[in-house]
Image (cartoon, rainbow, N blue to C red; front, side):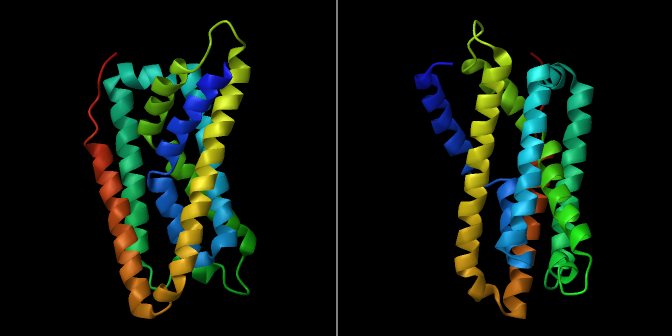
Length: 212
């Protein structure tokens, strides 16, 4: 891979990852509920999911989703339902269910796996991500060079920027956290983030299948 191509990819990756989406929203929500340190767990789960769907895209699943209306629809509905579920769960939280779970005396390991699983799930059920990787990677992969090595470089770069964007938004939320300290402010925050989760889920349902 040429260095100039990699720099262009970095610019695209920065723009995409710093545009708030489900992963960023989950990181911000968890940072308010359980703190910035534990939010790293959900971000690691999201990064793991990005590696998985990047591999799936490289293996050809992106082409399958683009060609098969049924496969695309199933994954689209599953993703939408999961995001709506997260939104409803956020609506029902008074001070954050994970915050309660993370309180002294609770099962910290179970909470850690729950956070990691949330981040992983948000990444895996997004058909836009698979199609994005499928459309993006061929623009930067050199056929004559080892594909696996290029896959590792591109995916690591993209995932690194995704983690960086999560850290940026989490720090921003930490700065604003004092304004959310009151019960009323926390309820409003939960309603707002829950509403955005639901809106993102419903937006997935508007995706239309386009055959290749």
